[in-house]
Length: 634
Image 1 (tube, rainbow, N blue to C red):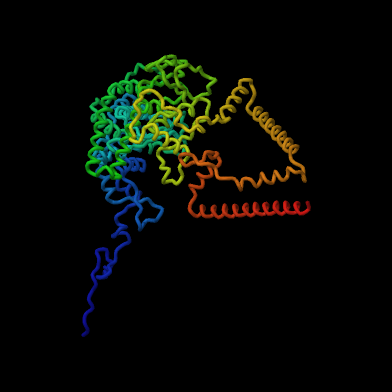
Image 2 (image 1 turned 30 degrees about the vertical axis):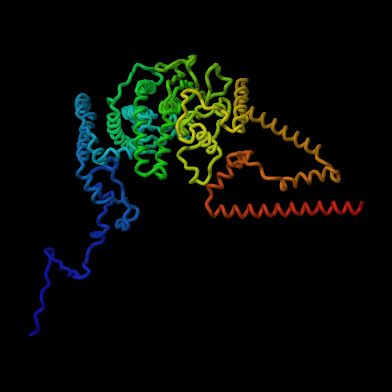
């Protein structure tokens, strides 16, 4: 008989077991390899048993972000997370608090629905709460790590300090109040340590950069306007970030205050003016902080000297790194003494918070201000009133005809404060006088040399700073007087004011007469058209007739610029004739072009110049030929 056929083994369910290839094996897709290390968001929600809103909040607080794996088994339209991150979230104590809050809300809604309000109030007092201190210590093992992440934290605090509580957008008043308080405390530390290094006013707000423990912290403070909350912004997500950043800044402020030997939190005087209670309380803290600023400045100056001496001893006097460190410390010391000895008064139309913060970081003596709520009088907490004889400078932002100018003080626009602080010395007053368009406000965050275009105003400011500070980079000895205006080029000092303010004053006078803006605009347009017609008629009358001797003069005048010499060059290598705004805009746009477009523009300009040169040569030959013909006939 033949060999008996072996029976195949059966599974408990009755199906036959499939043989697995010993070499390749049969595994389902996504069970091994890189794809098995990731999971989708829906799978993570089922594993954690939380809602999407709670999962998003948990990820923001823990610092877990989505991943982008190469192989996406569930499709390219899914959001993927690493399995280790999900396991990391499963062991988070806050997750248990979320479950307790969910149970609390069910009980509270049931009591409210039954009309048992006393029991609901009693239950609300036992509402579960959680803290984020352990998350800050977990995400930032050292203080330096926390300082490096302060940019977004301070920007978020500055943003919410300008907002109002909104019930529909779920913005609580407590969050806004605490954000404003923490932001003021951080500003107070910057003033005590004089850590401000750069400031720039833009259309978005005010950019500030401070140096803390050798790390640059940059944030954006919005303008003090009524904010319109856009509908497309999810403020619940922003409030989650704000919740974590508030805890982070509390830790940072406590450590920074402890390093300066100050008690935290600082005390506030709530009896100040109701018009701006937060500003008044911050100002009081700033004035109290200014009493011990000199001792702190002397101590930091000695420490800087020791750092420079150590760097020179280690690297030598000719080392580039040592020179760069020395220049950086010298620039920081100049900024700390920029406004020393001055007594400045801030008018009510000038934004108080950024100007005041910049002045105190620059070492100003005393600052006074007025508020509109007090009828233009000095607010409570101000160092002096507007009619004080101690004022050396007054910052205004309105036409000179609308306020009384008192003798013995200088009137400047707010940009003068920012520009003077950025270069580390007091700029001349004339270009920033009221009623004049100030010079361009250049950003200190931009390296003009790397960008390939150095504005003319940057060269003027650098030259002025070099003349005032000297070759050694030390600040001037004079404490309260402004720098001499003779160091500024005469062309800039005597530059006439543009017509913008004249146009503004004309519109104000027309409005006072009861004239509508549309009628005023039509009237101005008619006057402009009449002026253009009169100019054309006058030009037509004075145009030389054909065949006259003046035709030769006109031809010589047209050909004259080709034979003129190049303009004279000034002492700093610049033409004495400054370029117009249109030319500067063209040069700026040309500097921002890519190389391909620059080559194309160069070819176009070359062809245009060659064409003009040929035209001029032909005109010369024609004049020479006509002159020879006239001589032969004579």
